[in-house]
Image (cartoon, rainbow, N blue to C red; front, side, top):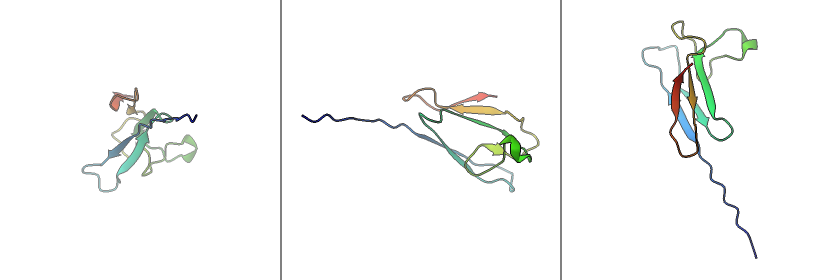
Length: 86
């Protein structure tokens, strides 16, 4: 007798498109069981801090954003993506 193992994979793909900031680029990242939360905020020029702006994260070179501006999270497998002030 064979057993069937079923794995459900829930992934939320988040795309952030800057408006009115020609020096910025679109950001795309995923939330899933392994990555349940992604921080967003002002990037740092100090690479050692790990806050470098890139296309696959939510760090922005913006002087008007706080360093820890907000958090994107996927609270459950069946829920929606939530955004909470950092």
